[in-house]
Amino acid sequence: MSKFLKVLGILVVATFLYSPLDGRGEEVLKPYKGISAGELMKIKYRIKYTKFAKDYQSIGDFYLTDKRGFRRHRRFLRKRIILNRPADGLDYKDMVVITKPANIKGLAVLTWSYLDPEREREQWLWLPSQRKVRRTSPSRPDDAFLGTDFTVEELTSRKWEDETYKILREEKFAGYKSKLTGETYYAGLDCYVVEAKPKKKNWYYTKRVVWLDKKTGAGIFDEIYDKLNRKSRIIFRKYDFLPEGPAQALLECTNLRTGHWTVVKMSEIKFNIGLKESAFTYKALERTKW
Image: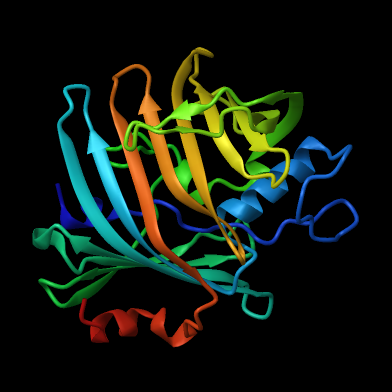
């Protein structure tokens, strides 16, 4: 496995979308009575991609476990500055640096994303062993991260415009028992249940059924159905509620076919710490020691 592919397997919560707007052209911050499925999902994406903040920093631990219980672990530092700048079309700049294990420590990926959903992201890879920055092409949306149960689309590139939405019902969430911590989360939480179907024909899934917190609009649980309309994977998200807004703190994806599961645990989450745009250039990668 190349060092480049190992790095791509750590890109777990990259941002992609512009700030969502409701039908009146105003930003929707929280669910309200009579909200449409589309507006509700815009709130979900705003929270998922931390569009309420100027910048973001966190430490991530990445666990990959097979059905025999064998586990691999990696750690990374993530930094992101949100620009939302029509002048040059930049949405955000994002950097992920691996800090563990030692054999790949210092590998880094820098990503620039744009407001135009049709414009491809720009991406650079820093290889410290070679002291070299290499420009790369983002992976296909339906590719799986090597050794993980998430797809590229689920974690880095899915846009609000990619699906159609319908509210199925309102109900209390049954609860989810974490494979990492053993705790049960969100049992009895009042939720909207939304069906999301891809606009692309013959896509790798036929639909998602998504549970969203009625109070905040945060997406907490997904059921993903494969091409034969069989429930194939589930994804759970737990949030930390900071003064600036909700932040994803724990993500778990289980492959119901293979028994494999993947966990991303975020810690030391910080918003609005004054990150400078000058730190998000490929030249900055060359100058920085990790």
